[in-house]
Image (cartoon, rainbow, N blue to C red; front, side, top):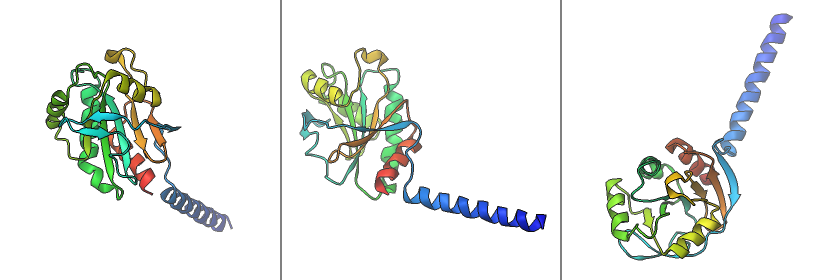
Length: 192
């Protein structure tokens, strides 16, 4: 009798685990390092790394998922690490069926010219879907405010990564420096 109960309990646990895996696959959870946020970014007039006009919202496909990072080209602390993480994501964005655009938005618009942004983008091998963006200090301030990104002291700014949809304003914000796998899991969360 004990053997039969043990067998039934084992089958029940296995069935519940399979059900849990099926539920997770149908509705994957966000990684623990991300929290959901509603963010309405302005359709800001910016310049890309080739000094071409870029409208923050209008120049992104409606069904695209975006990964946004705030950085600056002369940073020698966390920005290179954030850029390297985005480089890994850029190399693997084909794993997601929806279009994916990466946006690196400067937090030092007074210094980050399109030429500086281009050189840094080239150093990280950025694809055509990884946009390096700058604008006037006022426009950058509006974007940072909308994203609730505090970069009062740019040398000590927190890493801010947003993964989401421009169209809906549904984003997930990193709580600390994510790794590429976490960002790809978030992209999968939107792709599901």
